[in-house]
Length: 306
Image 1 (cartoon, rainbow, N blue to C red):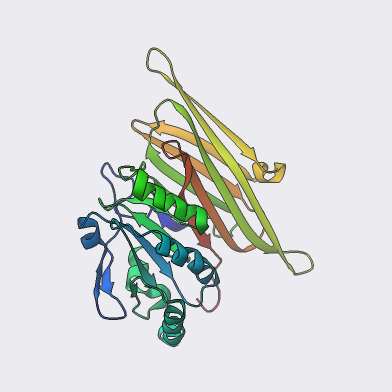
Image 2 (cartoon, rainbow, N blue to C red):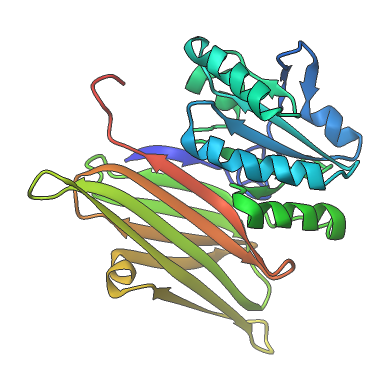
């Protein structure tokens, strides 16, 4: 099996980009030569939104109007935004023109390395846009922030729930060498008695009999119910509810507990030779009554140019 993304479970908050992990270092010079240091901003008591993007990335450019409107309306001294561009030497001109045309107000760090940019490597960025909200203690409290709804939740956490800290999730994703199946394993502190839910979505393309690409997507809700008896014994029930029968039948789920840790395993059977796989797992946080992205992955079979 090929390991695509790995988070190591630890007793203390581990460094990584999963929800609840301690954010990696982010230090560099912006286009004006000024120092950009995530830890220094956190030390000033600031929440920091970290964005990885590029001028050639359509979804990144699509998100820009939402982000710029949000920044104009949200003038909070406890919030800052910083970014790293994955533009290369060949596209630096386009990047600088976009920054000027859109009047981007936040610092942009770019070393011209593209996917091999130092910060992208340190943060394990394999797909963009990749966005994270880091609290003043350096903990990732949101990730994969998208659209107006995601930014509304950013504002809500900074203004109304500054002390919120999510559970720490460690995510490991693997895919079969022939891309016939995909497995996501999430480890987290064992939940207290109650009802919890995750939303797991996936999409991929494969070639049909006529040689044309066929898109497949599905989503299931993973409902986890934990009850405790008077003698302290725990009963665990896991239920999958899919948008359709095909989505439900393609995914198998299992949850086990070992001591203070819980382990959720999701196996997706693709059934085709695919051109790519994209998955996302969201956790519904009862404390916020909101969905938070735990992890997402994009993978494709190796190509001759790789």
